[in-house]
Amino acid sequence: MADHNHELPEMTKNQALVYGALNSAQAPLSAYTILDQLREEGFRAPLQVYRALDKLVEFGVVHKLESLNAFVACAHPDCYSHETVAFTICEKCGQVAEVNDDKLGGRLEKIAAAGDFALRRSIIELRGICAVCRG
Amino acid sequence: MADHNHELPEMTKNQALVYGALNSAQAPLSAYTILDQLREEGFRAPLQVYRALDKLVEFGVVHKLESLNAFVACAHPDCYSHETVAFTICEKCGQVAEVNDDKLGGRLEKIAAAGDFALRRSIIELRGICAVCRG
DNA sequence: GATGTGATGTTATTATGTAACGTTATTGCG
DNA sequence: CGCAATAACGTTACATAATAACATCACATC
Image (cartoon, rainbow over all chains, first blue to last red):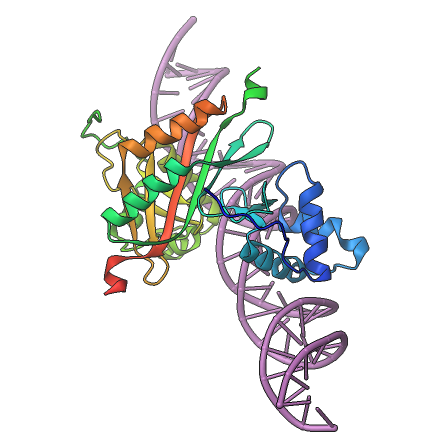
């Protein structure tokens, strides 16, 4: 079972702006899309976004989707069960869903152990067609 | 059990060159590294590499590592068990190992089924430290 | 007030990936 | 064979993603 802590980490202004953009988005955002959305707030360069994203990912409240080069807010940022997060990515509508599956985590740990591999983080992205798009 | 077919697909000249570069490499290669290696063979533009890579991935004899933006030759290109391939990626030495684990495939299918999601392909990349680097 | 630390801002650059267009090779068929 | 269809190829230009390097600012601590 996951440990819970209903506190969001302290955020700087830039981190809060980036996090807000991701939270109000209906789909993953690229760093440059975030930049464009935050120009009115004074953002002018990619690094401002990337630096905030780095911290947010470190805090565990934002995930990077490696196969999309895009970012999403964590579906449950108020808890610390951030170990093995998987995503389903619809290749038709772009919808992304976060999946937490304990058995999957166990399986990955076994694979790592079998290869004498010290696992740090897992990237699990399932690409296909979502229920809505299948009709 | 996997079906076997000890024939590599027909390749064009460019595809064979790119595949050869990946096969003789000791680590994943980026598209631009491949381009540089093949300049002597007449390659001049990124698209020549990307087009070959697209086909090789389609054939199933090359995999893309999404978290590295790099490509590797399949560890067993002569068989068709290309369904659910996982990779361990050492963040210290860069070594990549291909892992085939039937139970993992089953687990992912269950996750997809639970979400009424039609799974097309899975991206599984385990990042950490390999046995050699741990000493 | 000196100092250390972390966040910020800015410019320039590198790395990764595509669009658009035209040409060449090959294949299949009337 | 002649011809259409298709796929691969080559080239230029461009778009997107990410980082390097450097200066500055904010704030806490001693």
